[in-house]
Length: 81
Image (cartoon, rainbow, N blue to C red):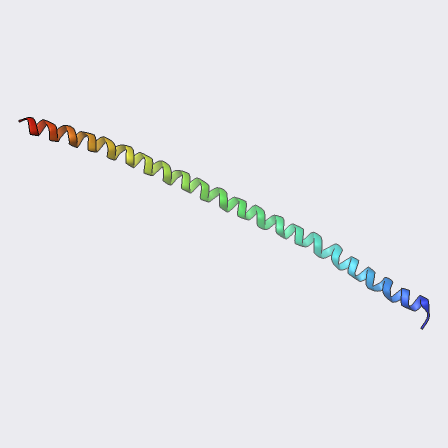
């Protein structure tokens, strides 16, 4: 077994590793970016839903406060009679 056979085998192995990594690494990066963008879109949707819910709750709270004030005024009016 000569030196050229050893280096030839190592060179072939190195070439195969480089080829596999040259394909797999960019594919993994692309898949990771695609997944991150999908998660970002989902997070954006959830944030909008939460904002809508918070606005609805605050609106209901405001209406409830007005109703309580009206009920207090009605109670005071009836109490004076």
